[in-house]
Structures are given as structure tokens and as C-alpha cells.
Image 1 (tube, rainbow over the protein chains, first blue to last red):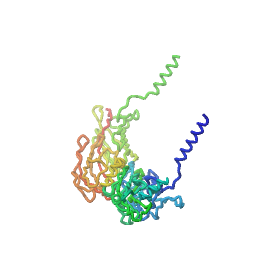
Image 2: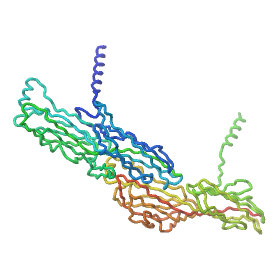
Image 3: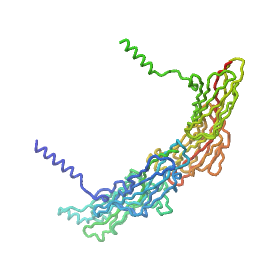
Length: 315
Length: 283
């Protein structure tokens, strides 16, 4: 009885320990990149939450890069607006630019995730609200930025002879492997067959790229928003919403993967986009077996939004 | 035991509230007669005569108390007795301004004329005042893409759209045939309703509506457009305390993805209240 108990305990400990493999935040080896986060608004508050008309409210927002890609400060933008915003003694709306690049966390090199705090002091409307009246105004903060999720990896391709030799010798053949960055969009690549063995005159294999919209915010076509200071424009059209660009950068001997690429691919929230392509290998330089680089970059714009309410009392 | 029961009954009867309440007519003192007007949300009016009975040729004092219980200042408050019965004396008083929560009092001393027989004399008096208030109604206009995103997220309903109402006797309602938030480029119809409460007569002298920048004026019956405002052009005739409503048409215009602006409405009105109080004049 005791020996069974000990055996079961050890099995349980081993099972649990298998579930907690430490990884590098931001870069996920072996599985589809995701996490659903880019530049995220971690805190957005208006203080005090109740004011008399004509008094000042302090709005504080904190933004953190929770994804795996650094964001250039020329490609991110904060937009502050709200209900009845014109009456809050301010120009409407407010655009703010980041004063530095928002780095992704890199544990290996000890680089922390970029964090930025914004504060605004706005004066509650003093007209249009009389004594005894109250109105609730909402502030809306959005962070727009360009983001990308990448898959970097290798595809191993064997000649028929080499594959047979490896089997005969009992050697394990190398399989394709990819590392993924995390972001609001996830990418997963699968190669069929894996490893690729080119029998006879064969010179192609299949790559499937699954792109997932994991975002809590909204995805839009890359560069659909204008980030230039003084001419910011956050207007989007319906055909720019939920769109991504997919690019493949592969070894020079690989070709025919255009079906796995495309601009303005529709990627509805919570859904997947699957791209399948037949990749052709130029076997001129393939004597035995070889690793070919195959990198996928999914580019998109992304914004998240937070709201805070303030009740204004007339006096 | 019997005494204890009796004692309990006495205690219980002491705790019971007196069931008799005479609306508007509250005897304040044995020797005086008082009238309290509480139907108007703007004011509390109390008129008291001392004594409640007077012999011909002798004087009575009439005390007035007006308290501003509304949310706005009251202006040009007039009180005058337009039927003094057989009394003579000062019969008109004006107060220029009465701020919120303030009270004003004054009194008249009247002399009763000679009579043949003892009579109940019904003194009629009128109170009128001017006031104004403002209302707001948020207008949320979304661009096509913003509407699409919020529709997909099912968060259209979560956009807070504020509005206010007034606690004055005059009630002006602003409503839309279409549901908010509006879509950029929609034509929308706004209905303005008018009604009042209380036993007085309502005269609306002015209504001005400021059009927010996310609405473009199309048409409006009863109103004329001056710059970015609409001004009431007809006299509101109240029948059964209601006046026919006005309809205005606008097209929506979003200058940013989510454009929430406030439409404001200001109005001035004059409210007239007639009341009377009865004084016994004895031979």
C-alpha cells in the first residue's frame, strides 16, 4: 500500500514539474506565438471621480509593452477624447506621442518592458450645467501603434537517399522548428511532411500558416493610422479593420510561397486565418540534407482602449 | 393586570399619528389663518392672516413667505391682491431676485370696510415670477468603422450618453426617433416636448437650442436657425398643461471616430399662480 502511495506521489510531482517549463517572456519556442497583448493600457483613472463644475480633474494613464516586439516611438500614438470633451477646457481631441521607443521585455539581456505614464489636467465645464444638475462625462484613451508578430525558423529538407540512410542507421531526422514572438496576433507554422523528404523528382512541400486574432483590442491594416505629429489621423474605414499583412522571408532556394503572403488579409476578432502554400525547392544545392530558413512576419496596427468616468456637479 | 393593559392602550394611542390632514390649509395658530402652496417645485408660498376674524373697521395683517425651492434663481417676483374684498391697503409687492434656497417675507396691513352683515371675505391674490433653466443631451456619432467594431464587440450600448432634466414646473423633453449612438451621415429626428405641472399658468418666453458640431441642421418647425442656435418662434399654447411638440431634423457628422458632443437647451419662462384666502369679517 505504502509503495503504491509513494509511486503515485512521485508520478504526481513529475507531472506537475512538467507543466512548469520556464520560458523567455516575449519569445515562445515551439508553439504558436500569441498572448493577445501589445502596447496595453495597464491603468487609466480620473481623479477625483466627482467634481464641481470649473474644478480640475487629473487623468492618469499607464501604458506597458506586454508583447514581444519593440515599438518605435514614430509609430505609436495616444488619443484622448471623451463625451462633451470640447467643454473640458481643452483642444479636442488630444494626441500624445511617446518620447521613446517602447521596448519589449527581454529577460536574457535584462531589458525591461517599456512603461510610459501620461497625465492630463482638465477643467470641468463651468457652463451648460446648472446648480443641482449632474452629468457623467466619459474619458476615452486609446493607444495606437504598429506591431508585428514573427515566426523565425528552419525547415529541414532531405534527399531520398539521405532519408533512407538515416532510417537504416537509426538516426533521427531533424524536424522544422520555429520560435514565435508574442503579440495581439498569433502565428503558427506547420510543414508537411516534416521533415521534408524529396522522393524521386519531387521538389515541393506544403507550408500552413495559421494566423490567429487573439487581441483584446482592435487590429487594423498597417499604416492606416497617421502618427505624424501635427497631422495625426486615427480615422479608419471598415475595410481597414481586422486586417493584417503577412510576409514570408525564406531561403533563396525556396520559392512559390506567394499563397502564404498577402496584404490586407481579413482577420476577424477571435478567428483564425489559414494560408496554405506549396513551396518549391531548388535542389541544385541539396546534396544530402539541409536546413532552409523560413521566416514569417505578420504586420498590423493595433489599438486598445480604456475608459474612465467623472461626474460633474453644477454649482 | 387591568391597569397595565389600560396603560399600554394609552401609550399606543399617544404614538398614533393624527389622520386628519387638510391640504394647503394649515391652521398655524388658533388666532390666525394660513394658506400654504406646495404644488410648484420652484416655490413654497405661505400666506397667513392675523387675526382670522376681524371686526368691521378694524385692521388685519397679512404675512407672506416665499421660499425658492427650485434649482434656479427666481426673478421679478410679483405678488398682488387683485380682489381685496372689502379690505383696503397696499396690494402689490415686487422682489427683483430670489436666489436658490432663500426666503423672503413681507406683510400688509389692511383695514376692513363697513358691512351690513357678517361675511366670509374671499381675498384673491396672484404670484408670478420669471425663471430659466438649461438642459443638455449628449449626441454620440460614430464613424462607420467605429460603429462596426462596437457592433461586433456588442459594446454599442456601453457608450454613456448623459442627459439632464429640470425640476421646475416647466418640463421640456428632448428625444430622438432613432436610437443612439448614431452613425455618421444618418438623418435623425429630434422631438421636443413641452408640459408643465402645478395649478398655475405657464408662459414660455424663450427656448434656445445650441447645435453641437456633430449635427448639421436640416429643418425644424417652430424654430429658426441663427448661427449655430435654434430659437423658438411660436408661442407655446398649453392645453391640459401640454403644448404640441416640435420636430427637428439633423444629419449627423463625426469629425473623429467617436464624436460625443452635447446639445444644450436654455429656456426662460413666467409662471403665474392664483390663490385665495378667506377671512371672516364680523359686524
